[in-house]
Image 1 (cartoon, protein in one colour):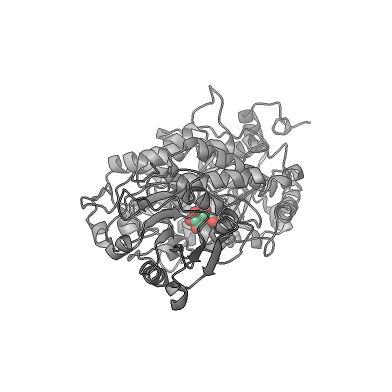
Image 2 (cartoon, helix red, strand yellow; image 1 turned 135 degrees about the vertical axis):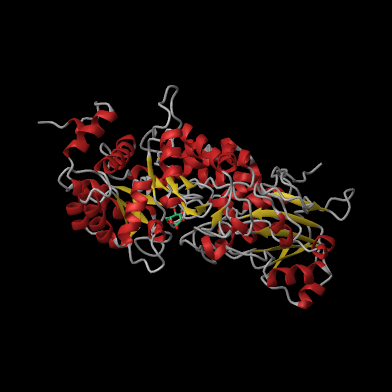
Length: 602
Ligand code: GLC
């Protein structure tokens, strides 16, 4: 007998019901389990019907693996999954948050803070579409993106993953979902997941809810707000994602008024699923349910019970999946977790898998491989870099702008820790979770871009750290100094001083004392700009974390394109001002540069 669920012509909801009716408890719980690549084995996939595998940041088949290597790996896991009793395909997830950033040679786009500076929803959508293609080329079906955090405090280590401190700007940039998944047609049922076709991926709006509103920006901290404020400031972008058919939503590690999101039935079920009508699946963060235990982690079974009953559908268990499966099985058998909760979770997971076409097209499509890092995508990334740059200062007096630079200047000094470092340019979540340094992938550094732009007569003097006599050399027309933050992610990025790292400030000071200087700041957030820096330098550009296409910067500083970027967040004067922010994050003290600030060429 041919099963309804195997028939692509049957309505998706009929296929979901049919398949669910065939599944054992073991298979249902297997589908709710997402394991890390490193512990995935054919037997676990076949015998336990594991529903999903992820690559945590940097968990590649091997160092500098290309898309084809990734596709071979994912297909290998998939073939095992298809050998399970019911042949339910697995869904493979990855953090492709600014391009397919785990994969060597992929196009790396500006991080979200830079995209927020563009205010360009169509650009975000186009980047989402390009990212989806490069993710599918690697055989991966699912990306944990976009992060739609409304980051209220730049001390947060994930500030760069947030489009803005302003809810309306974040809402606008959620168009990234339609890029990744495709845009649902008129009449698409509200709340239901949508994936247009084989060139699209399953998206994940994260981290629900209030991850960007924690006290003092402490990562995984506590967001203290009334429900009305939480809804207005941090929840509204999820409405936009749901209206675009976002297929999954990830729970936040953070808490709301002292209550961990991963265990919050009111927010995860009563609000997200019932009030907002979300019909995709809710996934935990990595080992996020573990944080529901007491500090000693003694009662993992309690974590499982709290999280699943709160409304988590798929658990990003990580590596200890046997324990999870054992505990959840026991909880269902004892009635502590009702089978109706399990069936709701599995129904949502199966719905997303059917919508994503995984049953019809479970394996990778090698015809997409040529698109990885292709010129079209790199040009798109270059466009995004151009539009993300924010000009904070241009000339010591407005009548004599310093930019655009003279591309035929006789001799220029190009210096700074970030002027020839692709890893620094890309920031966190690139190749590894935290990011790296040097030529970590294929791309164009700022120095590469300058050399490709200037006239043949121009001598480019490059020194990562300029010596005194280089600076004293009076035949230098001007200096370009690129400095900023070294890559970080999550808690490793929490920072309460927010100063330009010491060598960066020293380089600026020593060069600007003698030579007309342009400062390019590579950072995931505003940093303290001391009065001396703004006085001594001729021009200052905030370039955020631009990714692999450094020529987007020279396109603008040499004048072939105008500046368009506007600050996506307030540029504070000093961190002491950050502590006087009311709950809604709008500081009363006079900022150095306000939200929306950005100079242009006349
Ligand atoms: C991380 C992050 C989350 C990411 C997940 C998988 O801890 O919080 O944003 O998607 O784990 O790497």
